[in-house]
Structures are given as structure tokens and as C-alpha cells.
Length: 574
Image (cartoon, rainbow, N blue to C red; front, side, top):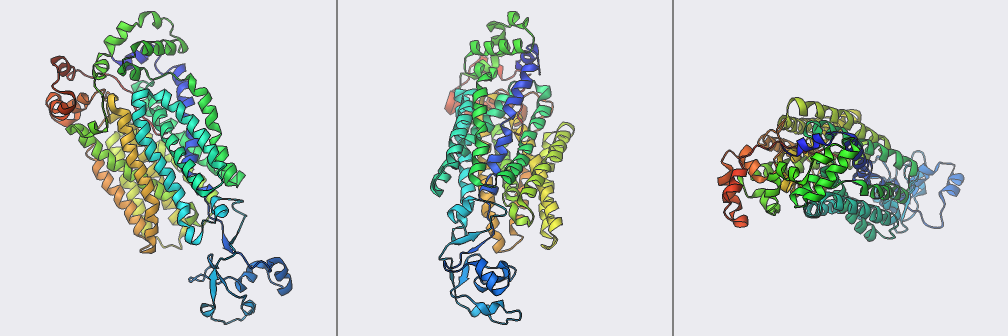
């Protein structure tokens, strides 16, 4: 009997699990806001050069009997395309002749200058953003996207650091700290007086977001029985989906970037306050030779689930006998290098690197430039959030019917097909292009749901968090690289789509080499992975791959590698 059977004894998916899963999933509403916040706090309002101080558009419009928009033509040259006024140049001297109805002046010969008096911003869509506050336009426009890149760099750093720390100090402790860090530093970002200070706080907030997601997912599913992990994992991922739509509503309501930043970070203090109620993962406690604490956690869960009679029968001896494999494997420590030491682990890790990178690469390439669609940014955010609902339901259906591998390959390949199809749609057919972009985002979202669950089922318990941190690092690199690709449209408009789609096709090919995990017990040790999926004997693989670390294995340990694992935990997409 393994840990899954112990969970069934203390109530299975009972009252404790319902409360536990709900409380850990609630922060997902705010994690969506953190990841996509830059769309709104750094939105680019319409702007033009500020007119000389001695001139007033209102007074001049009364004198010349034209509206203010028409009057700007005397001060601001048109862009080369002629579709709108230039945002970064103005005439050195007012060109009153351009206000004449039949003016034929050659504006290209008129002398212009930069915005020496700053910029004037349209406040109808955003009352204040980081762009309007620190003038991140024209030559400074790359600094606007730099905020998101720095934030994703923090998420990347957090995935590396907190993935390893949680395997050492526990999921609960690191999760509690991450809530507090995100609350304090997120609110500090809202009060930042400078661009540099804001970027620093966003970097540190990104680290905390990784801690919340990685440890929240693991702590959640390690108290869930195997048979419910797919359903619970997929359904709780809807918290992130609804969070995207909540972000649109908050941004529309507040309109000021400091208020919005503060509003999405304050709830983390509530999450921090109630997170002390969580029980540490009993499986992690056993793996770290804290069986007494694990037993106390199981007894607590049994009481909450209405199974007090189990407390008398579930003793430390029973716990140790049922989890002997975990106790044995806890004698060895593991690092990220162990993800590549053996054949089975190496194959899994390389394939997951490609899948995580490409999924995140395509997802954030579509989701982080909403203003390009030419419709309300608030409406686009709601639409992009809403398409995740059918996408996740689709993922839930195919995960249970087709299996993990086919689902992963299908989601990646279909997203690539849609991205490629958008290349051939004329730019003036904006509705069709937007529809295809939403479909592409839906399939990349389904791919995210699948890969979260799949990764947790592929990596063994002894190194699961380290593995999640490692592949999440690849996802963060993908999310950092995605905005940089957008500048390629200046070379060829179709080039960004070609890159995003090509990466998805390549990743779908890698996913074909991942082993299937549908209805299979989860591995607890690296030996289990080699037994199941490497194609060679576990003892020879482990001896070859781990000899530098652990030396020659004892006969008892080799014998343990032949045991059938009957436990499961799983992962979900937050």
C-alpha cells in the first residue's frame, strides 16, 4: 500500500481537500493579473508633442473656427504613411497655411524638431500609465517593454531559486513566504517614484509569483488522490482564466496604473494570513525523515474529513511500512544535474524543455500586445480570457480520452497551424485576424494546462519540484524572448508569426517522444522512471548515471527499484 491508499483511508477527496484546493487556487485570480499587468499599467495612450507654452489649442480653435484635432495639423506633421499625425516630431514654426481647405503645401520640406516641450497624452483610455508618467515614448519606447522583460526575468529567477528551496524547506514554508513577498513588494511598486525603482520591485514580485505558482500547485496536488488529479487540476486552472477577465474589469474601473498595481497586490496579505492553515505535504515530510510530523498531518486531515477512527489505526509504524520506498530514497539528495544523469530522465527533460519554451513563447507573443488589434484593450483582454474556458474544457476532455502525449502534440500542432494561417489573412481583415489570434491563444492555453499536469506525472517525487523549477525556467525564457520577436515585423510583417508557429511545430515533434502517463501510478524515485520509460534495466542505468554521486548501490536499494509504485499526486495548471 502506498500514499494514495493512505489518502483514501483518511477520507480521499473529502472536506479537507475541498477547502485546501479552494484556498490554494484563489490566488490564481491575482496571478493572471501579475503576468498580464503590463498591458494596462504600461498601456501607450495616444500622444503628440506638446505645443509651445504660449499657445493654447482651445483659444486657437475659437479664433480659426476649426476643431482642436484639425488645428493640430498646423503644429504636428503627418507620419510617412499619412494615416495619423506624428507622435515624436513637431514643426519648428506653426504652419497656418495647412489649415486652408485646399492647401497643397509639401509638408516633407517643412522643418521639424523633436518634442522639446514633452508630450501631451490622451486621457480617455488611460488616466495615467507608466508610459505617460515617465514619457516612455519615441526613443524611450523600448523601456516600456523592458518592464515586462524584467518582470519575466524575476519569474525566471524565482523558478530557479524557489523550486530548489521548496524541496529543501517544504512547500508550505516557501509558499507562505512568497505570499508575503508579493504583497509587500507589489504594493511598494505602486508607490515607486522612479522607473528604475519600479523595475526592481517588479523583478522581485516576479520571483514571488514563481514561488506562489510552483509551491501552490505542488502542495495542492500532493493532498489529492490519483483518480481525481486530472479533473481537479484542470478545473482549478479556471481561477487563472477568470483572473484574466477580472484584470480587464479592474483596469477599466481604475484607469490609473498606481491604483491598479496596488489593487492586484493587496489581496496577497489575505492569502498570507490564511495560508498558515495549510498542512505541509505528508509525502514531503516523509521524504525528509519527518515521519512524526507527517503522521500528525494525516491525523489532522482525517479529523477534518470526519474519519476520527483512522487516528487509532494509523501509527508511525504503519506509515513507515507503507512509505518505505520514499524513506529509502530520502537518503540521497538531488539537484538539477540529476535531471540529465540517466537515460530516461534525460529524454524527458530535453522534450519538456522544448514543450515549455514553445508554449510560453507563443502564449505571451499573442497575449502581451493587445493594442495592436485596433479595438478596446479592455474588450480584447476579456475575449482572450474567455477563450481559455472552452480551451481548458477541451483539454480536460482529450486528456482523459486521448492521453497526455496525444493531447500535448495536438494542442501545439493546432496552435501552430492557426498562427501560420493568420499570415495569409490581409491586414485589413482585422476581425478574422483577431478571431484566429484568439483561437491560437486558446490552443496555447490548452497546451499550458496539459504540460503542467504532464510534467508532474513524468518527474519522480524526489526531484519533482526541482524538475518543475527547471522546466519553468525554460518557459520564462520563452516569455522573455516572445516580445523581442515582435520587432522582426519591421523586417517582414509575417516573420513573428513564422517564428512562433515554427517553434510550436518543433515542440510538437519533441512531445512525440514523451512517454504516456494516463492512468499510470506516479514515479517516486529516479529508479522508477528508468524502470518504466528508459527501455533498460533500472539498476544498470542508475549505477551508471548516479555513481559519481552515490557510489555503488546496496542490494536492498537495487531490490527496491523493482517494486511497483502505487501512488500518485499530479499537477495542474494554476
